[in-house]
Image (cartoon, rainbow, N blue to C red):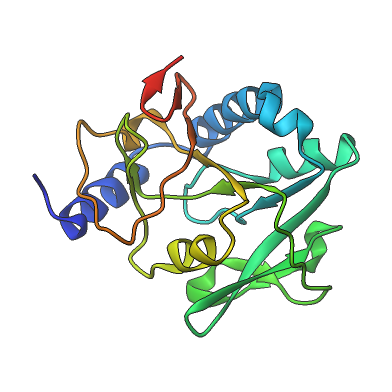
Length: 187
């Protein structure tokens, strides 16, 4: 099996081969699947990452949450930790850690009952996740086990198998533009 570093390099290279238009189209398809999930429909609070560099575009999911009257929050990096801020408008976001959009202002949230939209570099159909290497989401979720976890990815990010470590916390649901995986079972 490839190392996490090799997998990251492979997926980063693959991202560059797709056009902005493809990324947007697939992101909209993923958004439609996300908003039809019972877990999304039942949630009053949505925690989502702010996308960067050809990740699944989460702005569409956040807009749908706002339309449905849901509260939303996005993370900001402080040292080795993620702190989530209530997001009411995209103008709150500015370039932060590694150029990733982060809230420049707003109130922090301490939600224990929410649906989190997780990023990742690569996944397998058992919902194992290779993140970006900082462990931010694993550390955050270890402290907040009640948060429901949905990861979003493009189908090219799905590999037959990815390496796992004891500290990894996996999404309960993985959504691509093609399929949805619930704890390892394609639906």
